Image 1 (cartoon, helix red, strand yellow):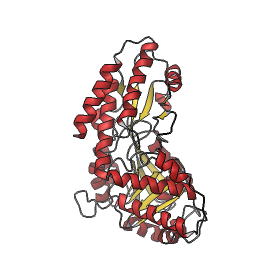
Image 2 (spheres, one colour):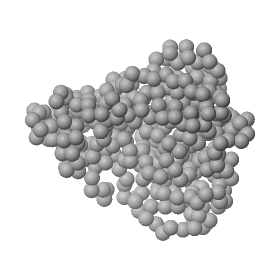
Image 3 (tube, one colour):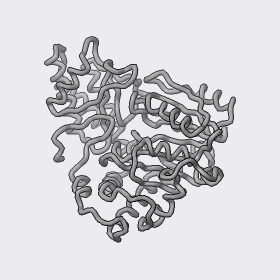
Image 4 (tube, helix red, strand yellow):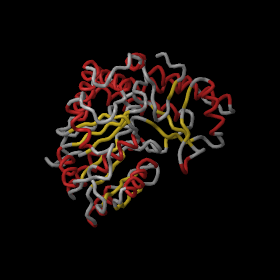
Length: 389
């Protein structure tokens, strides 16, 4: 990689040379047949990744815009949603819903824990909810949602399942053709961004709808949106030579290359790799006396929120790592100053993560802690190899 730093935050994630090279191609007209072919291929690969029977949308925007697009096209003002929140980014759906006059109820987990299935069942039994939002891997806590258990409960009560896959897509299974016990128990909407596990620079919003979610859009009629109205984008997704809004031409080049890399590795291999990396990173950091806020059975494969040992200075620690070329993120909200967040997804390699483990240990020693970096690196290797075997 030509990157000068190891960017191990929850996103953006490391960008490899072939993606940079794709992005650096000559900017062409969005109706140029060469660009149209690339855009169409990217759309088709996205559809294949999510295995949806409906539509996918790859448009200029952010993950937050993808959340808005998912919500405004499925739930009308006055209808009600349930937000299952495992952290800061689950809560974002609350303000989005309120902005569009959607009624919202919330089940908030203790940070580091999952919302109990009993609580979900009880809440859904009491009220008529049009949709339930679930953040697949919450970027603030590193908690992964249990879709195998949640989807059947949600669908039993007749609600749409909207999955925020911003920190999960292409790293954790999000198969919209999969049935969860019942033939009708499927994920209805998945949303994500280009800059996390897909490993492309920020700037593209990606949303997948199944036929049930598309039917919900038709039932609403007029929606309080223009750019985010999928009716305006469906013709473009079918024929990228059509115009609605100017696409991010060079980002589409990069995204198409990112999709090529995803399928070259294979989805199942990616899921297995991310699971192994997550467990290996957390095991290695535990050698330093560091513990993830999420217990291992609910910890995300894509990132970890790591509690500091007693007395560690968050700002000084992360600044020292940055001087060594390792960038990790601070924690959010009530965890600010008490933890850091480390990403281990997308194009991240074993070599990058091993070096990160080593640098974290060396920095701790420099700041007065007595730890064994070599032992931690060996722990990472053992976990990574055994889990991927």
